[in-house]
Length: 305
Image 1 (cartoon, rainbow, N blue to C red):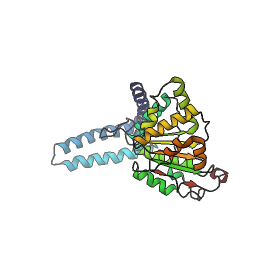
Image 2 (image 1 turned 30 degrees about the vertical axis):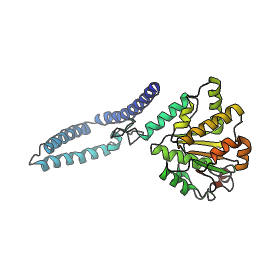
Image 3 (image 1 turned 135 degrees about the vertical axis):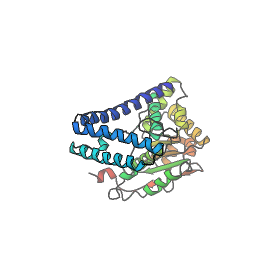
Image 4 (image 1 turned 135 degrees about the horizontal axis):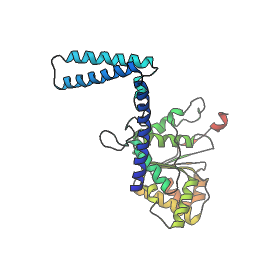
């Protein structure tokens, strides 16, 4: 974990450096203008004087405040003449919540920090993370036959008090992957740890674990708050690898009450035929939700053309 922490620290330092250097260069350019340089110097002095007067509860505090406000306005006016604003002199951090530090004011890890940990840990075991989609992207004109957006938003609102297994089934292009990705995005923004990967990538990971005789890496899939397996059924099945490792992951998640979302083009009968009774019983258990998650309609991607 120390290597991952070092990577994350380096990543944030780079982000902060870029944001702050950009703002500093803009300020340096503005300070080359004699009028702005003079006004800015007076403004900084007035601001310090005002804050000191406020702290010491000076009787003529209003005088300090008036001068401070007047110079603040003058500074904005001179900046405008240079075609600049106060915002141009402020670092634009990639994450407004933590200012690219990874941690919030209360000391808690930011959601972006959690996402980075997930990304680096996944890369460490050979799984590439994928960009997520957003519920805001759901265009009702293009997806009138996907009545699930509202319900999946509710899924995120009540998470983790959700069914241990949720199955999105249906034809190609009907929105299963899109909504699963939206769920991943929404929950990760709230600070939950999510792993989203295709069944093909999952299978490749199982093969790597089998060849290395390593079971430790599987804990990443077992311990995350939500595991999303996309397009189950598209991967080749190796009896002593795919089936055994998939059951191991599902068993561990079920035992620790960790929810799993699965998207698939297969119906129940085909899942049973392909994966067998043991995996089928974990996917469709007494705490699963799939009866109302059959996606119907034409391929959205065809309609967009």
